[in-house]
Image (tube, rainbow over the protein chains, first blue to last red):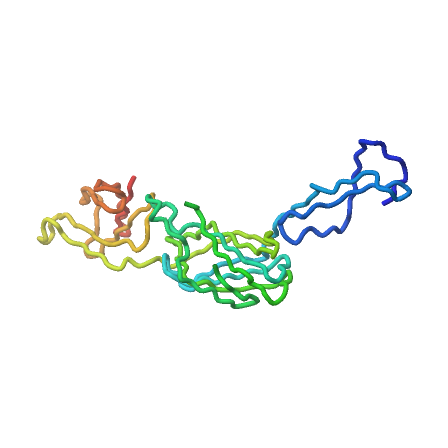
Length: 132
Length: 151
């Protein structure tokens, strides 16, 4: 970008870059680098650290969990069905955060997880699963 | 103790990138269905990029729609079994699921032995609302039902 007029020291300028694609995930980017040059091409000022961006996660187009057995408290297999809003690069991970099964139990040692091992993850569509 | 647990499926797409709009489907065994027919909230599903940042994330629910079955139940008269005589009856049953505070119990009487608002003197019990105590009851003669609460 070439300035059409002089800017004094301390001046703040703003650049709007259209069609900028945000980072592919919520991980904060490494730093952007800003440099200004004089008309001879020599660097005048530069900022090479601490200029980062952090994007916000998207939401799935659809996301559902359906138990095979619909009975209250039954031990069952749950099918997850997701439609991606955004691309995930190969090697990615799926994470499911779950509430406790009975969080109101009066004794904390009686509070149980929603899932109990051994459990098996079965890939049905577009997935190759190894569960941890 | 954490209030949540996390299930992680690593290297879920080893072959190639998954494009936007694609559906993915998988099953996980070993789940416990919720302890009531109310949809259980608090599940968050996310896709995580190889750089460990989140890509998509949504909250969802898990719902069981069929009540669990009380496997057994016994009603006995504890003082007299003489016909047409007011008696004390004892109902004993195991609860198949944990019951949260605020729960209530419905006991429906058979049509051959309907409950009346004048006959029921009191209801005492133990094991459901803490120690042995007298419960609050609501009688519906139309449905022959006694609703028992802790209130």
